[in-house]
Image (cartoon, rainbow, N blue to C red; front, side):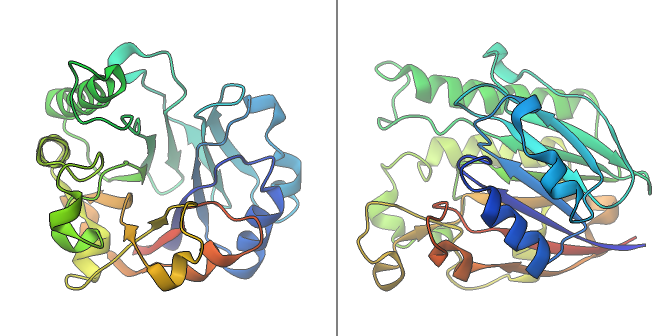
Length: 262
C-alpha cells in the first residue's frame, strides 16, 4: 500500500478553509495533518473536506488556539491524544490507518521569545512538553508509526537561514535541539525529510514580518515528518511546497510531504 502524507500548520482552518481545499484538490495527499486549527472540533469544516474525498477525521480542538486534525482518504480510527506537560492544550491527536500505521500529529508549544525558563514560563512549558514526549516514547517504544507536525524547532544548522545568528533565538537554541534529539532517540524515530534530502538549506516557515519573505528567504524548518526505524526505509519523495507560502492570505508555514510504500 502506497500513500502520501502531508503536514501543515494552517494557522486557522476556518479562515483558510479555501487553501486547505485547494491543497486537497491540487496535491491530493492521502493523509493531511493540520496544526494550529484554532477551532473547536465541531466547527472544523469537515463536510467541505469530506466532499473532496477525505471521509475520515480525528481531531482535538479549542476555540481560538492550538488544535490538531488528521484528514484521511484511507480508513482511519482514532488512536488517542496526549496532554503532554499537562497544559490542557489541544496539541496532539493520533489516528491508526487501515494498514496498521499510527500517525501522531503534534503541535509543540512555540516557547515565547526569551530562551530562559526562569523568566519565560512558555519556554519552560516547551521544554517540559518535549520531556514528556521523550518519556512516553521511552516507556513504550512505538512501532509502525509516523510522527508529524509543527515541532517548533529547527534542529540542524542548515534548517535555518543563519545558524550563528539564531543560536540564541527560540526554535534553534542548543537546549531545544537537545530536547528534540532526546525525543527522537527515545522513540527510535528517523527524520524522513532529511533522510530523503540530506544536504542543503531547507525551510518550511517564513515570518509574516518580512515584506518580501521569498526574496529575504530567512526561513526555518519547523515542520517535520518522522517515522519509526521499522518503516522509515519505506519513505520517499519528501518535499516542501514552498510556493504555498505565496498563496493569497497564506499561513506562514508551507506543507511538508512524504510518500510511504508499505
